[in-house]
View (cartoon, rainbow, N blue to C red):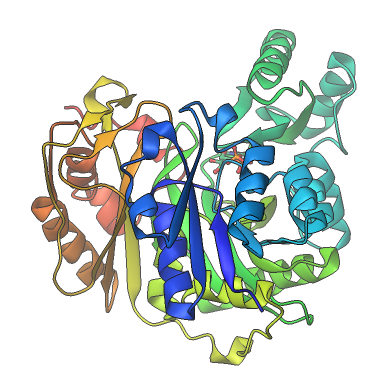
Length: 448
Ligand code: ADP
């Protein structure tokens, strides 16, 4: 039984967790930094505790303060959301040894999956196809060069501890190899405190297709179809949808079953996602596993009519999943646009500040997950996601039509947002036809 959950996060996801808890009759404790006193997650939680100054290291990443807040408030579980401590195995360990259930898989699984090259090796053993590349960490520039002789260019150098689309470099020739290797190492050290790299064949024009999984503590694992996340800017997702126009029922089943196999092999528990690259020829390769709820989970919720947060909390409490793969039925189509406080015309530069007016769209098929409101000050310290707009329709055309009109209704004044960007993008013929890959956005110019 879980009676009280401390939410170790902020913004829309903290609010999303609170909503699930309320529906389950679970009490909530919000923690927040001094910069987030006026955030909606603070307002809607049953209790709120300020845990420190604005900088994440002093607040949302401060494990001791968070655990102290959980102790003081009498919480019996901690939900990490996404980002911050969600994939930190030490934190998961600390929670569990303080008798607070960390809502997610075991620290051991998080640790294994958090090391991207180790995860790849492990998942390969479970029979999941992986991108050809180094077995584990690259030990030297020479080892890398030797490998490329076999694989061929282009290749991609990736930080073992990388995430969020950062710490990656594409290399096109032997001449560039050494310099890119050194730069990637320096970047990885700077961003993740770990210079280790691994190498992969760079798949040309792939689709990013990910499988949503849900697993209980009793060995039941189901997949809830795929999400198409190929609309990315510099490896960061901007639009996600489910289902993908290129995934047939047959391919979905194949990818889903393989993902379930992988999850079973590692003893997975809770909500998780396996990310794949889908090649033009229809083959697909494991890229990584995210051991948490993802930003884009709502599109899956809409088309499978399930509440993934509630499922995640229920299974963390030891409950059985309560449904089987046969019960998982895909109905309709959903697309999500990430609304960021960014000046998309100036290289998506973050644009924090006060929201002067805020009008949220509504009507059939529209869902908005946001912590923002009129007069809300977007603090400059965290990521720039201020809302997720999700449009559901009986098919993709209806979902796009609803998205178009909802973007028009969505009024945010005072800060620049990515709304105009999305309006332009979803009117492009390539988007409407579903004809895009992960490189699409970086190839076109929407400013024209
Ligand atoms: P992160 O954890 O930072 O999100 P991923 O490993 O999931 O990193 O990769 C993010 C994105 O980078 C992918 O969605 C894809 O666009 C691109 N990418 C990663 N690996 C490859 C590869 N081997 N070939 C082509 N593109 C890749």
